[in-house]
Image (cartoon, rainbow, N blue to C red; front, side, top):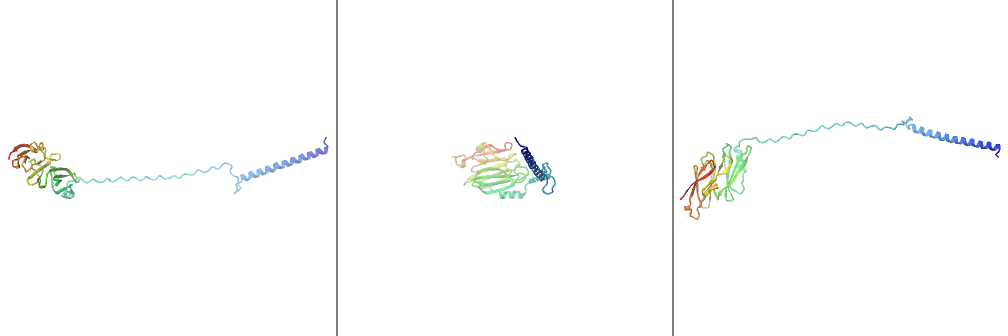
Length: 260
C-alpha cells in the first residue's frame, strides 16, 4: 500500500512531465510558425508572396507583314521578221552561202519560175557524174531550198536556160549536158501549177524520163525531138522521137517517130 508522500511525488512527477511535453509541443509549433513565415515573406522586399501559382505571360506574337510577291515579268516575245518581198541583197547572200554537196561548176539565176511575181533562185551544178538542180524559194522572210533533183549524165554542162520553152507563158528550166565525144542530152523542169516538177515524157522511147536524147536533142515551140538509143544499129541509123507539149497533163506527149 502506497504512502501519501509517495503519491504526492508521483503527481508532481506527472505534472512536471506534462509541462515538459507542453513545452516541447509549443517549441515545435513556434518553429513551424517561423518556417511558414519565412516561406510567406519575400526575400527581397519582405512582402507576402502570392500563394497563387504564377502564370507565365503569353508572349505576344508580333504581326509579320507578308512579303509582297514580286510579279513575274512577262517575257517579251521575240518579234517575228516582217513578211516582205525579197531584195537583191537577200538573193545575193543566199547564193554566196549555198554549197550543195559534191557540187562542181555551180551556176545560178534569179528569176520568177512560179509566176507569183516573187523570184526564185535556180542553181545548176555537176554532182557525182550528173546534172544537179536546186531551187530556192522565198517564204516571206528568207530563201529556203524547196526543190532538188538530178538531170542527165554529165561530164560538162553546155547550156543552162530559164525561159518559156513550151509556149505556156511560164518559164521552164533547161540544162544541156554532154558525155563523151558524141553523147548529148537535155533535161527539163518547170512549175506545174503547184510546185517545181520534172517535165516527163508520155510514150515513145523516153517514156517517164525528163532527160531526152543520147546523141542529141532539140526543143522548139511546143515540140521536142530527141534521138533514141537504137543499139545495136550504128548511131547514124538511130531514130528520133518527137513530142508535143500537153499543158493540161503537164507532160511531153509522144507524137511520132522520124527515121534518119
